[in-house]
Length: 242
Ligand code: MLT
Image (cartoon, rainbow, N blue to C red; front, side):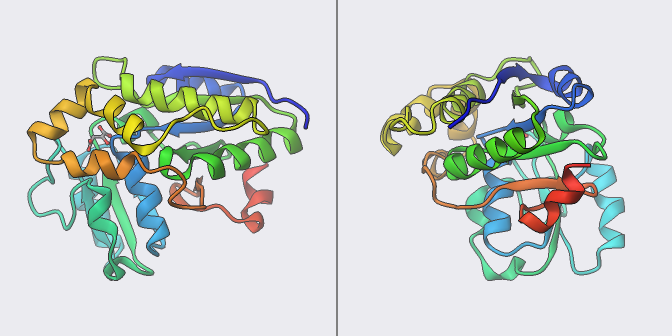
């Protein structure tokens, strides 16, 4: 299998640079936005519309009468929102066929204004093999490098995102080798000791960390398409490759 060129960066500047360079991008916020987007799509949400601010989310919902508001500030749902940013709360049929407007502290801030024509995939442990295979497919078909971007935190570096990105990169580079990631317990321990992991524990969301530590629970890859994350399918490929 031919190799793909892979780089790693963190935060909004690294993402903007990867967009300009037309890389195939995997955006990683394992705790918890990436894991939430993957889980919501796997449970039938029609699309996840990322917006930067709480105010913008409250305005956008008027255009989606059957939609839900979701997200967090300081780990908790903003006032009046239907959902927070706990991936476990999307394990429900209630969201089937319905759009979700999502705003989070770091992921949607790092993403910024949705980038037309950029190939932006969402990765986490929940879909690690699928997202790596999808990115490899784009990279080899379009002859482009892959950038794995950690969403990071307001402070810049986020250990849990870099840990996850490192394992995604390993799957991109060595797809035929046994996985570099260990079992769910090891992943969970690593996520728990991260700064954001301890914030989530204090806020009462330790079970989210266990949930986000599962590998390959879902065989799907979210892709940004016309300003919203949807489940990647080959029919979208022509649009995404433009
Ligand atoms: C974020 O985007 O900042 C995170 O997903 C925060 C969280 O844990 O909900």
